[in-house]
Length: 279
Length: 257
Image (cartoon, rainbow over all chains, first blue to last red; front, side):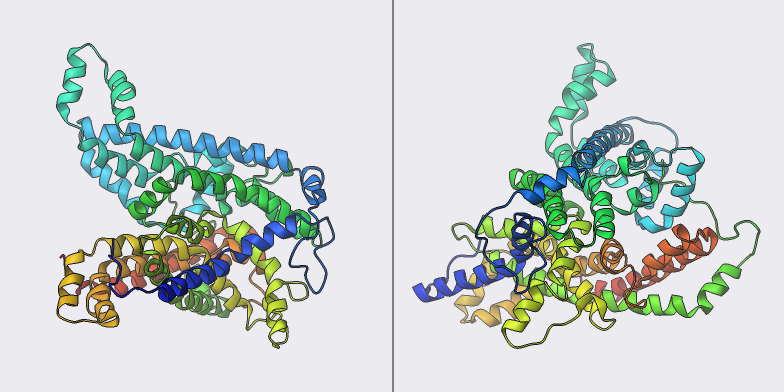
């Protein structure tokens, strides 16, 4: 870390904090405004001049989120999809990584590089064929379609493979001598050892699935299958003036990830640096 | 599973050869969308780079509570594109939005942000940059912290001032990081979708229709899958070439310290 300048003064520190605070205000105002709007009663949003500081906290909008907005259903769907896709994805990625790192079969490395190569293909190129396949499989409007299509993660497999390669063969050999099967080694030794990498991947997979929009938009058509993002977008389009309720719904949909983020900051930062992807 | 599935849908039933491409390249809609897309990237990428570096510089201190500030700056990244768009749509509301209220407070008349073809793209550019600033910051922070302190100390001994340190040491050593962020930002900026769908639907009057959004409409609103596939491939080619250009243009300056 940079050491402090020898001639640091009280004023310069104060100035620094002032700058930090103003930037924070700029960055966080949208969230504060959303929260404020969410805690106003329904219908109180459309006033001018806008009320900057609350004189009372009204939970009416949140009540509407549960009645008019069907939040519980969307939330359940989203949780179901996100958890399944994340766990499934981790399973697939780690098993594939193990295969690519440890097993020996013809064409192994070629397949691996091809698999990685698919990372270069942007999402929108495959989205039309994927859509047609899902339709052909009769899985339209099915939450399973959201999970299944996100099980294969080349980046995850790549990362885990690199990680697995650093774990010495002796460990596996020793466990085999003690009568452990390949699967046993995988479950009881390899996975626990790889917890940091797996956790980071899982975090990002979860976030990606929670926030995913385009794919659910294409696949889901009946309202009872909507995920949170689709539900929000739909609600915003249909109920044009229920701003408070919309903000309350948005607030609730953002909250879980925010909490998760604050609890696991280190992992997030590591993940960003590893992948360089914007979530 | 869905990774290896790419059908060559271009000559969709019936087989029309390269007609889809011909129609595409001849359509005004495509070129307008492309121009809009490039305009978005040209706005988002520099803004993202600047804000990323600035934020990183700002939080690269061992000050009490700095972790909180870093978390605060990063939090927009965790929010979904839909949530970000809805919040900003509300902020930019012409009548009741906070932004216009703040402008009015300093004497500037209200701007119809999302309803004016001239300002709608700017709004999207700004909120996309806002959304991504945090992750850029994290990457730049990592880059900043990988610069050995000895360089700064040696330069200070030679009498270099703050500004000189920044321009002669920090910036050059951040070049690989900057290039990385530049490449990733460009690729991301050219594929913005969620905000456009939620906020403007490509309007007003097509002012915010990007190529990806055009693809969406042709594929999933009009079911012209063949045509849309052509769009996909052309866009892919464009992004590929652009990335290659950026890579060539900046790659030769990469040095490993």
